[in-house]
Image (spheres, rainbow, N blue to C red):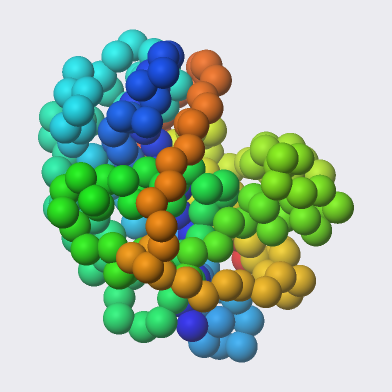
Length: 220
């Protein structure tokens, strides 16, 4: 079985139109239990060219490190999603992220670009699973940084970088994997729903492949 832990970065919008944010970056870690234990086996990264907010604001760059040059050179959402889907492969998989917003934005973009939803399947919210293991519930969610500190795991890379956030989420996923039951589902069969995306300002510099040369060595 394959386990895809992914993260996305979006346009930062400081008003009530947050739901119109563009996906600007996708990062993912593939884990496999084919060897009898859960191991990180591959990674995926791409920037995504925006369609709604084509000009990258200074606030978006400050928060994510994504520049206008990154956006202009990036593939379209349909191209990026197709590459992501191809990278995941044909083997059965669970699709996991830290929190619900990434899934909801992924569904919204697929609908907007008329991209098939059936590949968004077996989605599991690692943040909620982790929170419940700590005795909390939906509205008591733990942040990624706080969760890593609690488990004495160092954050590797830069916050609000899709690949680095995916990698650090994958570390927590490996830790709690023996203690959770993953759900099977399919986004194409689910009712339409929306969420409010909440962002805070940050000052991290972005380096999409920062520290990846020794990423997997640190994880093992």
